[in-house]
Amino acid sequence: MSRRFALTPLLALVPVVWLTSQSGADLAIETVPAAITTDPQTLVMSGTVTATVRNLGAGATSGAFQLLAFEDRNNNRTYEVGTDLPLGTASQTAGIAANGSAAIPVSVSGTVLFRGNIIHFAADSNNVIVETNETNNLNFTGRNSVFTGPTDTALNLALKWAADTFTDSPNARSSLVTPTVGDINADGTPDVVFSTY
Ligand SMILES: [Ca+2]
Ligand SMILES: [Ca+2]
Ligand SMILES: [Ca+2]
Image (cartoon, rainbow, N blue to C red; front, side, top):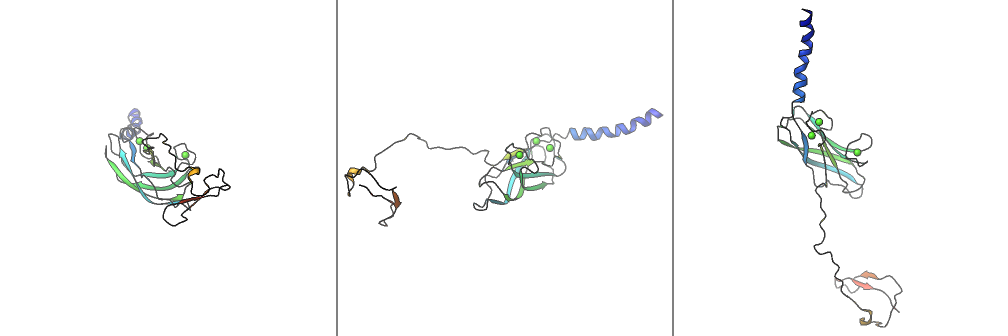
């Protein structure tokens, strides 16, 4: 009899542990806003932006989790309280099915270091969803930015003006001042003004 009573509490714990580890959810941020409105003078970022979170796993999420937007001030691509700047959080209360996604709006507010700075988003920032991969929950603005240079970067120099063809003082070889640009004769075309000797 004493052996039967000893096993009962142990068996009651087993299903709880099994269900949690077998949920199979895996949150990842699929898309983030291309840009977030920032006042160029005050550097205050504001507005509502939307990030899309996808469940890459084979199991649905259960329970609410938090989405965090922040400025990564120590550039380590993770959020540290007291170091990084939190800009806003949103709660996703509905579950996300396997391979399903949710567009989550986040109200952001804060003064960033400079206009256009990269903003990070972290899914399940409060770490309540057990996932098969906990290392892919971040994404950030500008990630898909690419540099598009001119198709032909070769310099094709051409002589625009020659001093000896000037109407005034074609024999002058030096200038006293830094050339100034202005539309002197109001014809809509900028003029270059300087004195020579
Ligand atoms: Ca994940
Ligand atoms: Ca950080
Ligand atoms: Ca998690």
